[in-house]
Image (cartoon, rainbow, N blue to C red; front, side, top):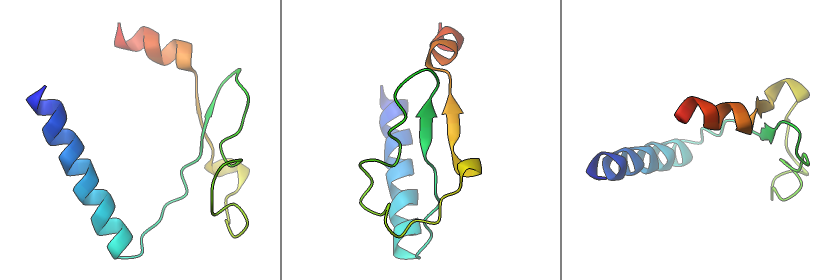
Length: 68
């Protein structure tokens, strides 16, 4: 559990540094065979420059099988 906490803290610090330095990567995620709403709730969708090629498609069933 401690390893997970340290990893989360590290990722939060990296995110804060990126935000403070104006680095914002477009990283929409779509789950295969599910409703695709990766941008529907995004507050920046009106000014976003996301292209279809930016979407990361994840097969949730396949990902869960890899974890087992």
